[in-house]
Image 1: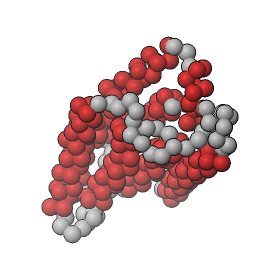
Image 2 (image 1 turned 180 degrees about the vertical axis):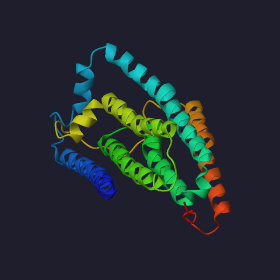
Image 3 (image 1 turned 30 degrees about the vertical axis):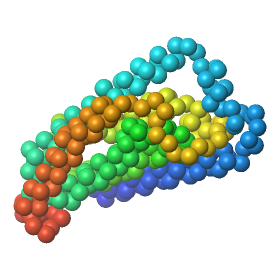
Image 4 (image 1 turned 180 degrees about the horizontal axis):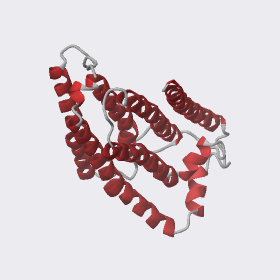
Amino acid sequence: MKDNRTFLGYYALGMLAAAGVTLGAGVVAWWRGRRAPPDGTEAATASQSVAEETPPETDETRRVVRKVLQYFVIPLWLVSGLTDWWCHRRTDIEHTTGLKETGLHLLMLGEAAVPVLAGLFMEIDVPVLSLMIASFFVHEATAMWDVSYAVTRREVQPVEQHVHSFLEMIPLLAVAMISVLHWPQLQALLGRRVMRPVPPRLKRDPLGLPYAAGALTAMAVFEVLPYCEEALRDWRANPGRLAPPVQAA
């Protein structure tokens, strides 16, 4: 058990280190872009050269990938999150792991909100992309913290374990697809290209108010509200305590 907890700790620290490295790479890429000469070099014409070299079919591919993100990946994430809440309810979370575990769930929702809101509203440049990737690593570290605590006080059944695999891999899938959609920015993040930075800005090609409002409403209804209800049950079962007393075997 001790060796297992040590491995989990190292894994979480590794994820946090990866997040720090990603953010550092974003800062370096931004600094390199600012130092690039404002002339006809690759740095000044990166967007133009990418557009000129892009095959015509890429525009259609981008639209398809974007639709898959909007109408498959995001709904799948919502269904997985709601299923995880149902699993917690079945295993009587308010009398086992209590508010501490629910707090970790809400923390992970906050971590996921960073890339989701950026993807909905912001133009994806190098700093935004680095923040999205770093958010994934931080989310992974928190997920490991969550599970390593949960298994000590309640049964994490096979269905819930399977749901967890979706909740961990869906953010990775989303970040990977966004990186492909913004390949020059990923190249700059990896040090393979220099791109001049621009001020943070809203999407030039917005997803549209109906979709954005619908997505945010769905997230509130199927993610935020269920876990707030879970937190309320935890609090009512154990007022003033993060975790219930350990029950005797």
